[in-house]
Image (cartoon, rainbow, N blue to C red):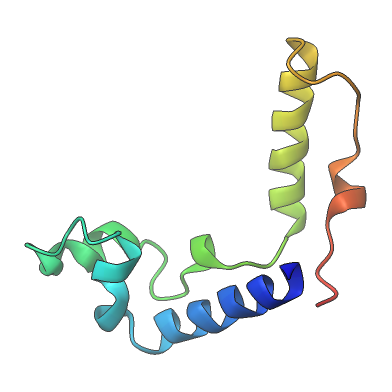
Length: 92
């Protein structure tokens, strides 16, 4: 199941890159349906690369998630220390 979900996210990301104007309303969860012209201003923040929607797990993302995990561990919200890098898997 996780592999199928990940592949679906990759296909969706590819479609957004191919024709972003078609998908802005969907990406917004229909919240800009009345004003779709706001789509490029809200969602195209990196010149059409849409890296913020990429399902790939990057080193920068791992560092951010590890920092967040460490914070929650420090304030006592998580019981054990984990290495987020060991959980990341882009093999599919």
